[in-house]
Image (cartoon, rainbow, N blue to C red):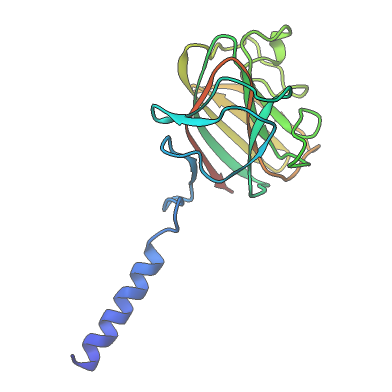
Length: 198
């Protein structure tokens, strides 16, 4: 093999390595954490019967007394989340973002983007950020597939559910931390969950 051919092969191999994204990372920066085929790399807080079923990560029973969470191993400061989920009418779930303590997930120490159609106070029900951004009218998630698009950039937080903005606030209480998928009650299914650091 000629020297020029060897150099060309080496350069091509280098360009190929640069062009290919690492596992789970798409070329536009999105990292897929749930793809419907496996639960993926999460820390577990609380106990629920998380499993993969029919192309989704599913929970429908707590095996402990408190809500259960799948918590990212990576903290995020500024980011976008895209999540596809199915909830039963009586589901109590949500996505908790910028959590201050990865071992103790709660609305007081995270921003809670709620999925809770039957919440007694619907102003902080599905589509709201609990205790920070009310939703009116509250959209219903029960019995169908839905999408959340959540953006956190600096003190600006925005939630879009099924193409409709449900929350848009400025708040700087929590600036950084992992995010978590909750199982509290009913049935929740996560078909796809992606995050893109900004």
